[in-house]
Length: 328
Image (cartoon, rainbow, N blue to C red):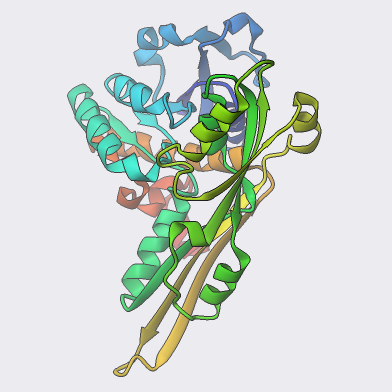
């Protein structure tokens, strides 16, 4: 029997989830929910209906997992606790500083509803988080560094778009090359947030909008831009569509550590990603963790989880014997 998946939100991430489901034969897309007029949303999967977001609560017995594809700034802090009472849910909440409080709220809601929620799923937080934990546990004497980009951050772009007077925006995260080189060389530099990355913002402002106010709101936005050297470029909508329509991204997790009685041996562990499409890759991770959420729920493991709490085998469609034979 296929795992029945619902998608809440049909933007870049939602469309990516739809595509990823097609590559997983043990899953089927059952419904898509949107805040837009459902009649205006055209899916690529034949036979699947689009419903208004309000209809989700009436379809609790028709879905095994609901994948939430909203933004971290304002959507997921409200949506994930709300729907975790009704469904097994997956979200991609990526505001690192607020993950603990988001976890507590979702955990409480999921336990009240007898459901399983996995939050902050993606590549960072997500795959990078796992690699940070692995490397830290294996090399307890050392330092861990995370670099993002160069690439488009969906969460930061979404946060800019929510500012009054912004029509559209793209935000690029750019690693500082000298910092990256020092880490790879095993120098274990002490780096501030500002010394590791810069942020480049390309913003389309509404006609007559106060650009000075918009720029100030971007640069002072807590948890997003206030700790970075941020450059804001105001461009036309045509320029944005022409020059910034793709959504590449990537990054590195690097652990530099020492072993030996005198810490005489040095090691560098590096995990890297180079992505043509940030939303499509993130969506593929969401779908794999939807399988895990379904399995955990079947076992009665209710409440909120993160990627750190999920056995790797639960992500795979292969059974234990096949995994031991082909991937161990």
